[in-house]
Length: 202
Image 1 (tube, rainbow, N blue to C red):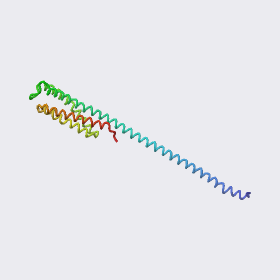
Image 2: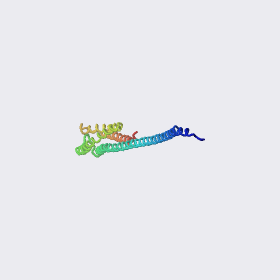
Image 3: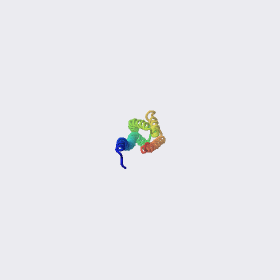
Image 4: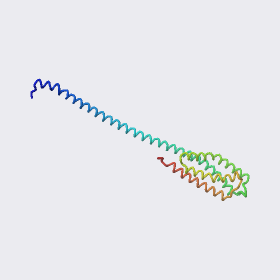
């Protein structure tokens, strides 16, 4: 097709700018499209990284909390065992006295009193340990375990007061009964604290 000079001039003046404008518009759209895709990709990547980082951070906090609680329970158990051990030595001394060749009749002899007072002082020295254990158990929310410690200490304290403060001489059967009860409470304590120790916090 042949164009006249007038038609060619008209084409150059009117159509060429439109073509260039269309080309520029397509280029701009492509640039915007690419930028949006890159931006969304970066946003998705950043969001995913944040969620993974937060998840790992939360897991680390739980792990540290779990380890610290285990450490606290180990210290609590050690303090409780100090008291349990002191009472076992007390019971060992009393058991030897009651089952010996010279049982109290009706009262303890002076040598027997000397042994009892030595064991009693050891028990008193360990009393702060058991009080500290109870307080820390309640702080950890292990109230059931704390109650077991108190249930252990109550009959022990009452029996001790009868001997030391009231100067009474309990019978052999009374001694065996409190020794058996305290042993059962001690076993219940260890079973309960073991469950708490091994449980994983939510």
